[in-house]
Amino acid sequence: MASKKSSTQASPMAAAAASLLLGLLLVLPVPAISSSDAEEAVVSRFREYLRIDTAQPAPDYAAAVAFLRGQAGAAGLEARTLELVAGKPLLLLRWPGRRPSLPSLLLNSHTDVVPSEPHKWDHPPFSAALDEASGRIYARGSQDMKCVGMQYLEAIRRLRSAGFIPDRNIYLTFVPDEEIGGHEGIEAFVASKEFKDMNIGLVLDEGLASPGEEYRVFYGERSPWWLTIKAKGAPGHGAKLYDGSAMENLMKSVEAIRRFRTSQFDLVKSGAKAEGDVVSVNLAYLKAGTPTPTGFVMNLQPSEAEIGLDIRLPPSVHTEALEKRLAEEWAPSSRNLTFEFKQKTSVLDNFGKPAVTPADSSNVWWALFEEAVKRAGGKLGKPEIFPASTDARYFRVLGIPAFGFSPMTNTPILLHDHNEFLSKDEYLKGIGIYESIIRTLATLKDSNVDYESRAEL
Ligand SMILES: *[C@@H]1O[C@H](CO)[C@@H](O)[C@H](O)[C@H]1NC(C)=O
Ligand SMILES: [Zn+2]
Image 1: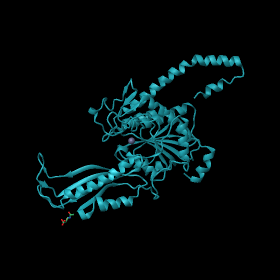
Image 2: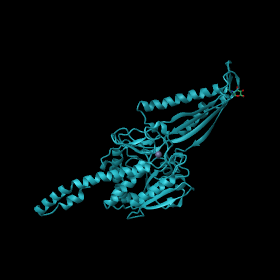
Image 3: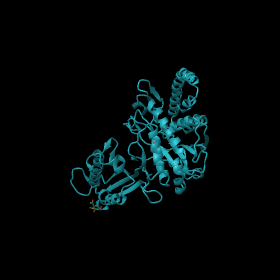
Image 4: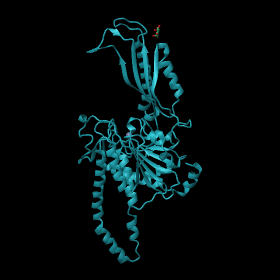
C-alpha cells in the first residue's frame, strides 16, 4: 500500500528528500480522513445491498440485480444479466485478464436469503441497522452471503484503483435460488453455453463464520438424503398390548436411528471428528394419529405412521453400509415398513470419485489460496467438509475445484438464525483478504505454468 510513496522518497538529494518527507507528513492526515470516509462509503454500500428484500419465497431479484449492476459499473466490470429461467436473473460479471486463454477464476455468491421472523429480531431484518457501539450490522444475509458478494466487488474496486490487471479472466456470478436448492439458479447456469465458454479453473463460494481467530475453509460438503419411512400395522384399542401396530413397528426404528445419531454425535462431542465428517440424522417430522376436530382420538392405536429424516453424508462415507443399515434396521419390510427417498444426492462426482477439492499440496490452487490468506494477515483453520449444502457442489461434481470461504472471524455462526449480524470491522477486514486472494489467484506465476499446461484445467 505504501510502496508508491516510499519509491518517491528514494531521491538522491537529501534536502529534496527531507522536504518531500515533510510534505508527506503534512499530507498524511488527509488520506487518513479520506480513508475513513471511504470506509463509511464501503459500509453504506453493503447496507444498501442488505436492505433489498431478497427473502425466499418471493425474492426481489430485479432490485438486487439493478443494484449490483450499478456496483459492477463502478468497479469497471463487464456485466450481463442472464435470464436462464424467467424471473430468475443471474448476473454475470467479467474482469478480462491479460491472458484470457488461462483457466479463469469464478467468484460466486447467491442473491437470495432465507425467510426470517421479524418479530423475533431486535432490528427489522431488512433495515441493516448499524449498532454504533458494537459496530454490528444486523440484517438477513449479512453473513449468508451478501457480505461475500459485496466484498468481491469492493476488493476488485481497490485492485483496479491500485492499477492491478489480472492475468486470467475473473468472473463473478450473483445467482438466484441457492436457498431453495439452486435448480433454477446455479444448476441451470452450469448447463448453459455461457458457462462452458468460461473455462473455469477455480470457484470460490460461501463458507461459514468462525467464532475464533481462524478463518474456516471448506473443500467439500455433505450430501443430503431426505428419507421418509412409513409403517403399517393392525389398528386396535388404545388399552390393548399387542405386537405389530404401526406405531410400535415405527418406534423400534426411531430407537435404532437415535442410537446411530448418538454414536455419530459422540464422535463430534469428543473431538474425534469434525461436524462435516460424520453422518447426521435428524427427525424432520413425525406423522401419526387419528385426527378429530379438536385433536386426536386417544383410545385408538392407528394403522399408519410415518417419519421424515434429514440425513447428511460426508463425501468419504461408505454408502453401501448405510443403505444396508437402512434396509435391515431402520425400515425392514419384515416389520411392515417401507421407505422412500425424497432426495438422494450422490457423494461422488461425475467421474465416480468423492466430490471434494484437494486442500493440500497436490492442488496448486490450494497453495496459492493459503499463501494469499496468510499474506493478508489471516490464519486458516484445518480445511473442513461443509455440514450442509451450497452451490459449490454443482461445480465439484463436474470436477471443477471449489473452495467455500466467507471471511468472518470472531463472529458467531448466525446464518438462518434470528439477529444475523456481521461487524463492520470484520466486513472491512474481509475485503482486504479477498484483495490478496484475487491478486494472488489471478496472477500466473512461472512455477504454475507447467501445472496449468499439464493439468489442462
Ligand atoms: C406385518 O403385516 C402382516 C400382514 O398384515 C402381519 O401378518 C404381520 O404380523 C406384520 N408383521 C409385523 C412384524 O408387524
Ligand atoms: Zn448461503
